[in-house]
Length: 175
Image (spheres, rainbow, N blue to C red):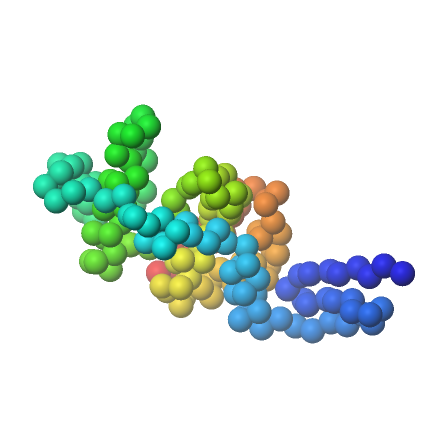
């Protein structure tokens, strides 16, 4: 005899052939999200040590420009790019650290070819949403509500656009 396990925010389960249901608490839903994030994606994760940071006095213009764009304009997301070894990770770490020290950093996601959960976009918006929810209770409530409404937001096959809108953009707009 095989047992089928159904997971959703209604809490259906089949254990030993006995089917039961219970309503999941907000903490249960939050834990469901926590199990889907990419550990180590945060800019200051111990997995990323030694941290790739800009040395004092280097990349000053780039860091100052990024900080100005992120803190004094309507632009809250910046895409910067460069070839291998051009210092992207050092600049990203340094600006994240600078913004965190000013309480202006909402979330980070550092990709890694070496770690499966961070080598693609499957968990990027789950992880960013989770980090935002840890900082802001109101955003956390919105994220939990979104997952209750659509538990497939936690699935890797879900549209990244839907995940971005429901787990990141809508909660940030509520702040």
